[in-house]
Image (cartoon, rainbow, N blue to C red; front, side, top):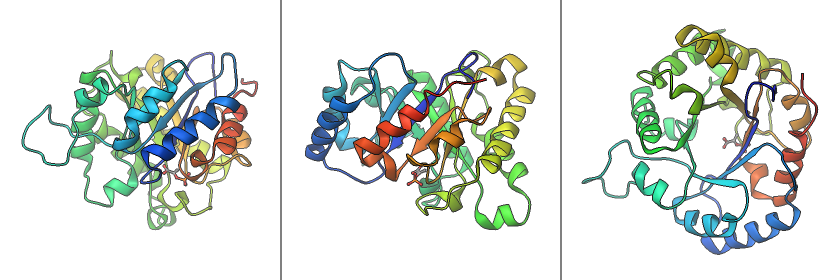
Length: 258
Ligand code: PEP
């Protein structure tokens, strides 16, 4: 992390877990143990039906609520989909885009790009995910693969808007597996992502953008991962479902930085 130049963001991704009633219970518990004072930015991205309960519960706090997906179109005949302006109106601040679980359902880099543009247009903070499979890592193409995902995902994002984007590096082999990337492995890719942003935009923008790590981050390994200079936070699945664990990760993000 480097709090001098960019925001630290700890974001939860609940995936398809918790009902609206369970959301209410989680938030009530979370609020009682949430760190007080000025900490990092905290986001909780929840299933669409849980957004109203989450927004209501967190209204007086500095926790931002987010969605886990968005449709790139402003409105129309897209049964079952949710548009960016609907998320804004519902009180969302963030939206996860291009999670590997959605890419596995057929989402392409072009879809991710259209969603990032739509989210920015509506005023949402996109948390754009990227990351390689185990096969890609073992064949030594991680750097190129992730660079390509970043370039395609950010196509058409202007100089003014790039700083609003949060990038999450999530190696697919580390998501939900309990197998975390080592701090060095995660740092190496996050540093490369920043270099790609530098080439696409500028040094200033590269220095200002928040790059998160995701993949079995938990209360035990968070401190070491977050101590890396180019890891500006975490996107957390499993451990964000338990208030105590999520709070400990937020606390790990409050360590001194370079
Ligand atoms: C995720 O869903 O983005 C994720 C990183 O999950 P987990 O923390 O459970 O690996």
